[in-house]
Every structure is written in structure tokens, then in C-alpha cells.
Length: 261
Image (cartoon, helix red, strand yellow):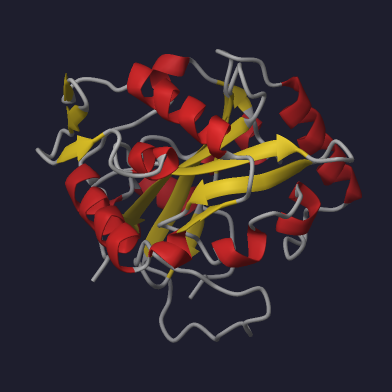
């Protein structure tokens, strides 16, 4: 069972005017990029299990993305916070698990160190960024197999609000990111199922919710430019919090939206 819950949500994006307007991107300090929260041990145990038992579903790389993956691993190691201990070629995580740095592909190693799912994007022949590699253990209703190797417009095809104007704005954001000056946004959706691993094919029919949503799923999404390879790391820190745990004012101000099942 992958019902790993946080006890609180650090920010309510629907209550922040700058975040509520799509795409809702804000500057971020590198020191605030990677997050270790109270769900770390549970999320990391699930990530390790998925990478061991279902690697083909949660890890993918296109040819030529290896250098960017190595650069992202180096950046992750540089920004690990308190609770990590490095001894030569091994890093001990805050949950006590030891990760050998050269035992697995660099992107897998990086993903086994942090709570965030990790995606790599590089400009394609037409300039639009393409998903070239990812460890996606906690998908929110999408599948890595359908997105790997596709450009941003292809990735967001099923998203109603991702029209031509939004696509141009997002591409300009990707082009403008500078090393050491990441960007971030946070979303929020009401879910009936608190499971972290929720892949959903694009063609899957919508299901009627059997129960009202009782959980808020929120992703802290960061965009980080890798200086040497010029790739962009898109990282996703997932929070799943019972609606009942949110402050009453936050619950009351949640916009009306469809429950995701």
C-alpha cells in the first residue's frame, strides 16, 4: 500500500494570488529546492520498492541524456541538507538507508537520495524542450511511457488549459531559466484515492468518483537549469494531506473543482 501522508501542507497555492494565476511560477532560492519532510521515510521506501520491482514503469532515458543525468546527480549531492551523511562513495539518507553512488545509473541514484521525482528536459530540434529522462514514481494521473521523448506541447496535450498561448508562455519560461536561479510553482487537486503512485494512460476513460475527495494532493514543482549540459531539471515534491488536516479557512477557500479518482 502506498498511502503515505503528510500531516500538513506548507503552502496553500490557491490562496496566493501569484500562484493561482497560471502558470503561477515564482523565483526560488537553491537552498529551498530539495525538501525533507515528515513523509520522507515512507515515500523513500515506496520509491526504492518501485525502482526495484517496477523499474520499467518509473524510469526511462533517451539516448544522449546520460551527461545531464550525471550533472543533476552532482547538483543533488551539492544541495543535500541536514540528516545526510556522505562517506566516500556512499550517502546515508535521513532514514538511515545507505545509497552507493556508483551502483546504479546516475538518475536512479539521484532519485534514491531525495523525495522529489526527477525529470530532465532538453531543447529539441525546433527549440521546444523535450522530456529526455525521468524517474517518476509518484505520477498524478499520467504515465512516463507516454511522455518520454515528447516535447512540452505533446506532454501537456490532454490538459485543457494548455492552449497555444500557454505553451508559448511556458516555453519562454524554460528558455529564461538561469543556473542557480530556479523557478517553482505549486498546484493542488482534491483526490479520492491517497495513493502516491497513480499512473493513468491518456486514453483511459474518466471514472465517476465513488466517494467524495478526502485528500489534497499538491506538488511543489521546480525548474532548475543545469549549467554544463543546458538541460532543465523538472522536480516534483508530492504532498498528500487529508482535507481534515487543513486549517478551516484553507478548506473553506478551496475553489470548486472535480474530484480526481
